[in-house]
Length: 290
Image (cartoon, rainbow, N blue to C red; front, side, top):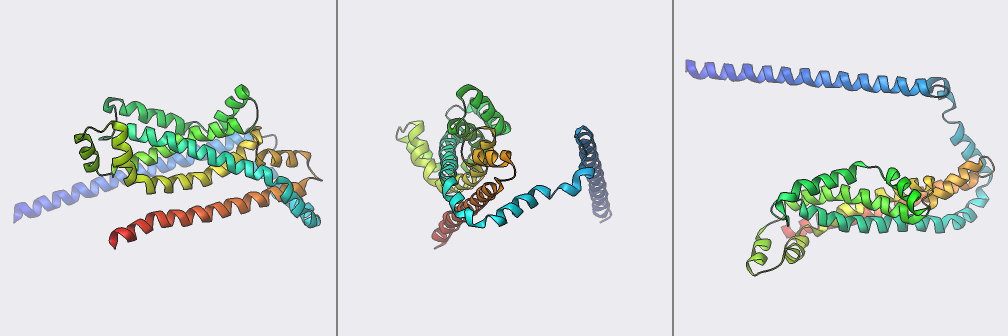
């Protein structure tokens, strides 16, 4: 009994020491993080033309000007909605095409980077690093390079968003693949099916609902991204918003209409995709449990 109580005491002491070390490391990391945030803010503030605190009282001046002018021209909003609707449709098309292209590439990359499913197991780290690179480069950087090469328009935006989407969805898809059962794959392999046939018939039917759920979520993100890329000349409603804001007073009614179009479209697609994701995930669970 003495030995047992002594071992329990030692385990408790080691646990408490480990907990103290963990708390100490967490505290040090938090202090370093706060110090970096404060120093970064101070450096950025010192390089501004004015200063954050000295100009903070003007933070709401621009929204106030936009709302004031838009409220005086409420009757013109329906006409602006009709005027900018084609640009909104172009933005949605960019997001849809880039999501589809990126999801297809992500599906291939995820299968090639999943243990037990990969066509070339030794190249799994290579494909994972490729997805890391695609995920790490912001869309706007890719779009700027493509605009320089291809010129302005929707094509650079679509390619830039698809490139980033492939990296982001590839990571999510590979995690889904880890939970797929290998029994159908082994059965297809035993009858001489090729790698593509094993993936298409043995894996994709298992993971398709989760693939689609993640793709819908990414579609929402890509609508926002395609609108932002319009500011750098990639077309769509973001380009129209940039022009309206560049003209300044007198065009703020158009800017307000564009903001409202973007807001309502994002809310609409967010609700639709949320309902579809809910049906895909929970609907499947209910069917299995039944």
